[in-house]
Amino acid sequence: MSKLRVLSHLGDSAVSWDVDKAATGDPDAVEAVREAERLFATERARGATAFRVAPGKPAERLDRFDPQADEIVVVPRVSGGGGR
Image 1 (tube, rainbow, N blue to C red):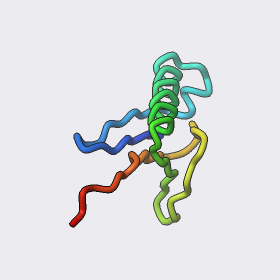
Image 2 (cartoon, helix red, strand yellow; image 1 turned 90 degrees about the vertical axis):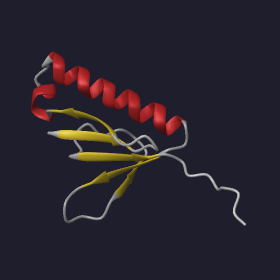
Image 3 (cartoon, rainbow, N blue to C red; image 1 turned 180 degrees about the vertical axis):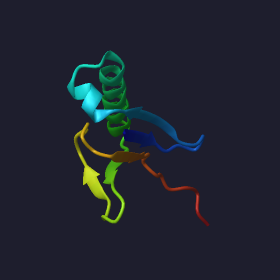
C-alpha cells in the first residue's frame, strides 16, 4: 500500500492507494492515485517540498509525483518568524 502524507499545522492528512489495483484499473485505487497526485501538485504549487521515504534509505526529494513510491511526505514551506 502506497501513501501520500501532507504535513500541516493541523496534523497530517493522508491518501493511500494499492499500486497493483491501480495498475489493473480498479476504480477506487485509480481515484486514490488521482487524489494523491492532485494534492501533490497543489502543495508543490504552494512551495511545499516532497520526499520519497523508505525504511533504511535516506529520504529522496521529489519534483514529480511518483505513484510507485511506497510513501511520499509533503512538507509545507517554512517561513521565518519575527525572531528577536
